Every structure is written in C-alpha cells, then in structure tokens.
Amino acid sequence: MNSRRTFLKSSAVAITCANGTGTAEEPARKVGPDKLTIALIGCGGMGTHHLNLLAKHKQLNIAYVCDVDDTRQRAAAKIATDAGHAVKAERDLRAVLADKAVNAVWIATPDHWHAPGAILAADAGKHVYVEKPCSHNVREGRLLVDAAQRNKVHIQVGTQSRSTPTCAEAMKRLHDGAIGEVLVAKAWNSQLRRSLGKVKPTEPPKHLDYEAWQGPVPEAPFYANRVHGSWRFFRDYGAGDIGNDGVHDIDVGVWGMKFGALPNRVAALGGKFFFDDDQEWPDTQYVVCEYDAGNGGPKPRQFIFEQRIWSPYVQEDYENGCAFYGTKGMLIIGHGVGWKLFGERNKPLEEMKGRADLSAHHQNFIDACLKGEKLAAPASVGHVSAGICHLANISTRLRKTLEFDPVKEVVTNSPDANALVRRQYRPNHWAVPKGV
Image 1: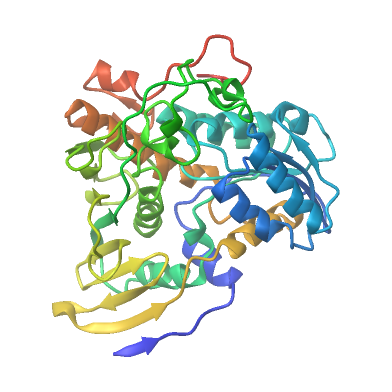
Image 2: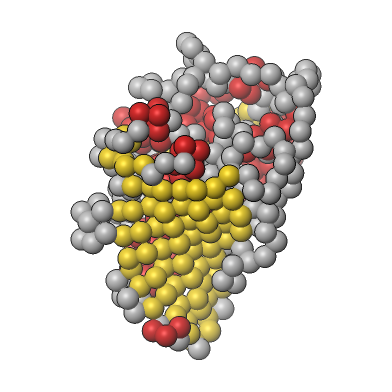
C-alpha cells in the first residue's frame, strides 16, 4: 500500500481542478485588493468558531457582531475587541446591512434564517458566507442562487470540505478515473446524539429577543429545547441531522458525482426509532436518489444516504463519510479524516489523512471577494446538496417516492409533497424572501 500521510497546505490549483466540473458559479464583482470590512450575524457555537479565526485575519476588519441573544452578542463583541477590532454590537441585522462600509457578512444563524438573511444581504450588495444547509427548503435554495446572480455577489456555503486539500486530492483521483465509471455513491451520518427531552412552553429569557429569533417563521410559543443548537431538530427551524452533519457528507457525494441538479426521484424511509423526546425529524433514515440518464451524465446513477444518530460506532472506518463505487474500484472518504482508494477485488492502492480546513474555506471566500477567484462552494452547489436533504425529508415524512422535475424543481406525482418544496412564512414579515 502506498501510504500518504502528508498534511497538505492549501492548493488553489488542486481545489479548482477538483471543483471545476459541474459547479456553475455566480458572476460577481470584486471589492478590491486589500481588505474586507465584515459583519458576523449569529454568534452562537459555529459563529464563535468562525469569529475566533476571523478576528486574527489580517485581511479583515470586523465592524459588527449581530445576535438576538444579548449574552452571545456581548461575548462575541469582546472577542473582536480584544483582537483589536473597532466593533459595534447589534440585535437587528437590518442595521448591519444598511451600512455601506460593510463588504461581506458571515451568517451563522439557525437554519430558518440562512436563506432569508443571505438573500437580504445579497440584495444589500454584500458578499455572503452562509452556514450549511444554505436553505430551509428547496424553494429557498433556488431563491438564494437567484439572489447571487441578480446582485453579482459571491455566496459561499459553509461546506468546508470543498476547500480542504485532502478532499480535493480524493476528488481529483475520482474525476481522473481512478476507479473507473462511478454509477453509485453512498454517504452516511453515524454518531451518538443526546435526547432533547420533553418540555412545556415557557416565557423566553430576557436576554433573548425571541420575536426576532423566530423571524419570518410562523409564530410559536417558546420552548427551551428549540433554541441554541437544538433548533435543527424541529421542522420550523431546521432540517434535522441530515441537514446538519449529513449535508457535509451529501455535499462530498454531490462533488464526487458531479451532480449539477437535483435528482429525478427520491425514495426514503425512516423515523424516530430510538429517541423518545420532542424532536420532530428522524433519528434513523435511509434515502435513495436516482438520477436519470441525461441529468448530468450519460447513464442513470444512484445516490444513497444512511443516518443513525444513536449508534456510537464508525462505518467503514469513518463516523461520517461517503463511498464511491466504480467499475474498477472504490474510494471511501471521511471528509474530516482522510480517504482510502481501493482497486479491483478491494486491493488497497492509496490513502491520505487530513482534517477539514475551515481556514482554507474562509480564505477561498476572501480571495473571491478581493481578487475575483473562483468560489469553492457557491450557492449553486450548496443548493443541490441542501435540496437533496429537503427532498429526503419530504419523502420520509410522507412515506412516498417522489418524482421530481429537476428543471422546474417541482414534485410531479404528489400535490402534498410539492407543497413541502416551500414553506409557510409569517404574513408580511420584512424578511420573507422575494419570489416565494
């Protein structure tokens, strides 16, 4: 076995090569050669992770931190101030977007704010880095792509594998034909989550502007287990764990298979097999997507996703991963760990180790904004990865195989399913995306 354990530095050439097929990028204007003035919108766990890196970056001036939770907002402001930034703290993202000095925003809010916030930012002329999944539903994803194109801004989705050199090397092997013709891929999300318990509605804490937290979503009582991290397990606010960790694995599959559109058909089964708590999305899920001949390739192809968020073991050496099955071999990648390449009859050929590189993903976005370089994860590919999650959830929820038109992006065999391609919003709310 040729063991490769080198930790690669960022390689723009390798990543551009691996991302270059099937990932149409929005045309966008450059800010300039030197520095970006930015804002962080959403200062929770992932937002703080971003901030700790961004605050040290020499090409960035952090002008705002924005959060509807005063406690988190103050903590974020301290991080930025201690790093030497003259930062303002805001609750209302409209005040941030109104400042013409802000060139770009990082959005690390709950899922239900991802597309509405990013679309508002794009319409305000800002470049956008938005966390995954980039949408709460299929329609929002399309509107996000449209907003990037309409405003000629960059929208980068936070699937950092796209900027990780180790992953780029795996994709290069795949696209160069190392395992022959690839007709099937399978991604999985296998890990142990915790119970969210069962709670009754209460008054929201005083430090949280719950009305603003809900945003354009239909109004609902405050439940303590629906905010700050656990929102992703409830239908109004997130897409379940398939849209949380699963979307990373699905995105690697989309990248490797060069899927440039959503599938023609989705069949899924699953539900709550393990957790007896308030969460609404499945803890167990099996999804099969079919791409017909002509939808990005000359032959039919299949993409599978498995989810078990109650199982404390790894699958095929990777807790979360994706396997590509070719006519001459197999490639298995744990996007945050590394990959292994096998030839015919499972002959080990090559492997590489290396972790997902968030800093490289930041730098790719910054270089796109300042220099006009190609985005690694534009909204157009983020929409496909997130859209697979949404269609899988619809199929699982209705226990129905979906026939889907990837051009019109509608379900053709079920009015009930097609209604779930989009969501209900609070009437006349200022953040409802245009065109819903």
